Amino acid sequence: MGNFLSTRLFRVGETQVTVSSLLVAAAIIVGSLIASRLVRNLVADRLLGKTRLAAGTRYAIGRVLGYVILFLGILVALQPLGVNATSLAVFGGAVGIGLGFGLQDIVKNFVAGLVILIERPIQIGDSIEIGDVVGDVTEIRARATVVRTNDDVSLIVPNSKFISDTVVNRSFRQPRVRYRIPVTVAAGSDLAEVETALLEAAGKSENVLRDPPPRVWFDEFGERGLRFALLCWTSSLLHNAGAFRSEINRHVYDALKARGIALPSPQLDVRLQGPGSDLDR
Image (cartoon, rainbow, N blue to C red; front, side, top):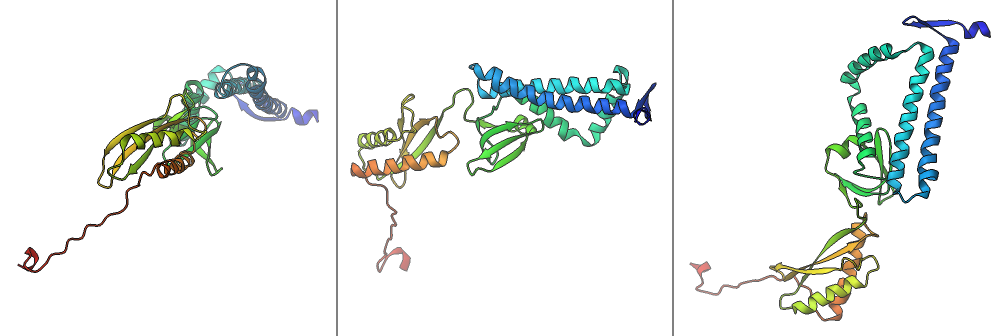
């Protein structure tokens, strides 16, 4: 057994790598992976869980500490293999050439992940919209971020997308958002009655914040009627605009109906030309 462990495999510089040194390096890397995960969970959930830090902040601190431990573990694991600072510099140059050919996306996404964890434009639990993807951030990994949609589908989005593209974060700094509900009523309706009805409709919803209060804007005179906008703030349906608008529309319809305010109906104008009209000439 001793002879097997001392078997020479290859040489790194002036250091002869044996089976035993290779096993030691592998054990250190595995131990670093385990320690990285344990420290990440310990810091994020137990130590910082007792503080007032937001969940996204705790997650970011735990992730960064985990990366640091893993990096230090890899450095220590390379020592039994005879990889010193000079060898690392040469190796880094070779890796840099390799990155230039085929690993740009991986490195770009990893660096973007570090930027996200440090700068925190998005955090765990945030309700975001990027391109056609709408949902909640559930995990920020080294290469990609996991977003769970309203249909309970998890999407893996590369981290670089959050750095290069425009991201709508409805939970950024203040966990609330204002929705604009368009309403059109029949021409000739009483403006004060319409405004009162719309505010009453907003007040019937438990998802509408009382502060800031709802507001009503009279937008314009439309071809089919008078156009209003009901502006409502919510913090409970940040990521589900469809459900929020559906609920408010129901309340608006009931409030308008209760006050006898008519909705615009389709109208078609037909003109009949008699004998001697311009069409006969």
